[in-house]
Image (cartoon, one colour):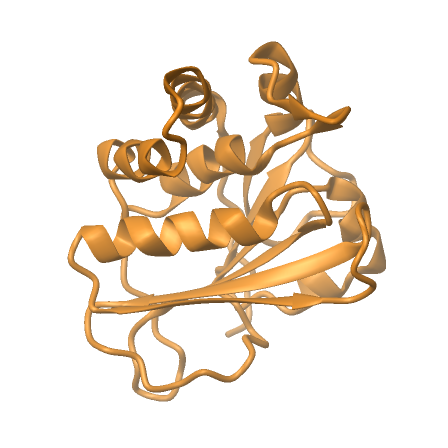
Length: 200
């Protein structure tokens, strides 16, 4: 899938929103690495922090293009917003910053009531992680299942390629298989709602 940024460049801009400890930054890096492995020459991943503590809101960004990318500024109008904690949607900034016909990929058990005007991919990543016991120090880790949902939306990275990249992050066999299973299960369970916003 190719996106236009409106300035003549063709690449996909992804903004990740989560809370400290959920793995949003790692997810941004894994997806970028998976894209690179599949032949994309332009790949960047970056992060930004507020208060650096567990549970605090954090964000990360990924850019992916077929050709090398020569822009490193912050992403202001992403094509895709990936939200690991649906409560972060309450401030409204995430939805308002999406490009027309952009995608919201959200960890939720049902469609958040505040979301009405964008394309949406919903997956209950928390339930999947609990099911597979992806819990560290009492915190449910939802980054690998949310990757499965993003893969379902974007055809830039194949499921097999993503699974291979995730596997390389976890040398221990049990952790590798659990995280790969979370990606696969989320990919299968993601609910897609197409609802294009009108004005460009």
